[in-house]
Structure formats: structure tokens, C-alpha cells
Image (cartoon, rainbow, N blue to C red; front, side, top):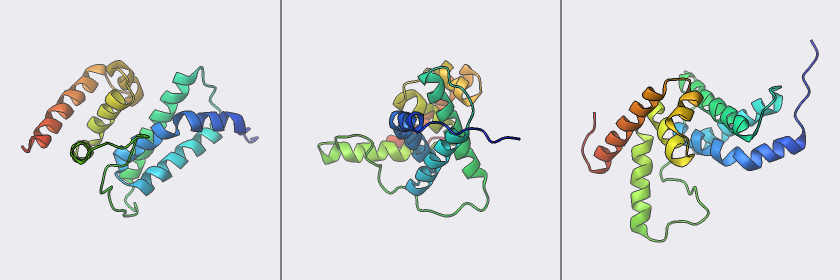
Length: 171
């Protein structure tokens, strides 16, 4: 068996410049740990480097990266010997310009915490829908489930987050 050729430096630079932030944000929303999110991001791009898959276009590449990130996060959660890290204490700055006033920062922290308390499937659906802008059908393709399941996850996640943010315990 001959070794597969590695991807070009130009391709890897392009992929990392275009999608590393997306991969990192998804990983962070799942792992709730900066070191684990960084490790996941690195693992995903190492898999890309070793992959021999020919991508049809940028959307195919992005979908592969997101799907691989979600799978890697699931693997991390299943690992019994997973190293212990402390969760993110504050929402990380995911934008170039920080919020102007403290009230907005407190609200974004509450939203971040409410999102972080959702089950992984709901958290993924919310992130892909409201941060990455995917439709329910596209999320279904990425998560390998039915669009109706994604819509249910989104409905339940919004309901649960609303209750959490209003100070009620959502079940």
C-alpha cells in the first residue's frame, strides 16, 4: 500500500484561513473548554491534511469540516479517559469588536451559558442555524438526521433557552 499524497500547503492555508474560526467556534460550543476546542480544531485540520477526498467546491469543504468537527466532539465526549479541564468561565470574544456596554456583555454571557447547557444535538443545531446560517435541511445533511428532527431540536432549544434566560427551569 503506497502512502497517500498530502494536500498542498496552499490548499491547507486557504482552508484554515477560510474555516478555522468556524471549526473552533463549533468545537468550543461543544467542549466548553478552550484547550479542548483548540485540540479539536487541530485534529480536524490534521484529518483534512491526510484526507484524499476531492472536494467539489467550498461548500463541500465547509460541510466536511463541520461534520468532522461534530464527530470529533462526539468522540471526545465518549472517551472515558478524557482529561479534565475547566469550562469556559466567560463567553469568549468571537467578534472583532467587543460589546460596548457591560449590560450587553452580561446578556451575551447569559446566552452563552444557556446555549452551553443545552444537550449536544440541540447545541449543534442552534450553532449551525444561528451562527453559521444553515437551514434545517442543510443541518440535517450535516448531522445525518431528518429535517423534522432538526426543527424539533431547534424548537426545544429555543424554548429551553427562553425559560433559562427568564429564570425558569425548563424541562
